[in-house]
Amino acid sequence: MRLFIIPISTRRALIYCRPLRTGTSNETSVIDRITGKAAETWAKWEEADKGWKKKLVDWGNRVQQRIPFEEWGLKSIPSLNSQRRLDESHGSAKVDVLFPGNAIREEKLQALLRRIATERQDLHRRRMWWSFLATPLTGPMALIPVVPNIPFLYLVYRGWSHWRALNGSKHLEFLVEKDLLKPVSYPGLEQLYAKRVPRALEHSHVEKPISQMAEDVENSKDTLLLRMTDAKKLATILDAPELALEAERAIVQAEEQLQAQKKEEQEKNAPQKKHV
Image (cartoon, rainbow, N blue to C red; front, side, top):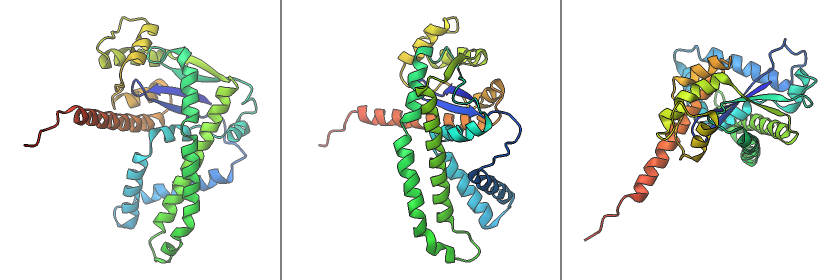
């Protein structure tokens, strides 16, 4: 496996794991078989032109877009046991972490990875159990003919999603604590951010050394670094086609949150009208 750290804004980064590209493992877990079957069923439903399948797919896609990109990133990291089934050396050999050295200082990377690994664990654990424990309450919906029990499916999906994210976070925490991560400032990422950082930060420019540009990012206020068009560029640079969708989602969410923060600050700082 290989990890990528993609700064979306000057304060938020997407973590993404590209799995080990080997032949198909003979040990396919029950969870993998179930999720594979679910993905196959969903793909068939996406072909529907109308009816409840079409409506369910449209609703489901909107739900997925609202799931925080941090959760999607952690879900991309397999559980420690799953990775060991694929790679017997995992847990002893170091894992490459590719990042842009001109947007993140290498000495800060360890702390960033530890924060990503631990800050959402309690949230995922609570919501996982809440989702699974609430599923029996959806039992009466199963009596409705033809249409599937959507509340049940939603709770199971969210419970599974939080479970995956929790396992990914624990795996990442294990790698951090055991010092099994090898930082690699990747030239392709450096080239991209050498253009994006000066555009986002007025006081930075292309000619600055890598370390100084990274300091500019660290010392700036939260500002969006990437554009939507950068998502596919990232996927090409890192040879990870699936990364494009994850990056697009992260860019959209980060931009929306920055706009909401800006609006909140403007309203807070706006002069209060005096009532006569």
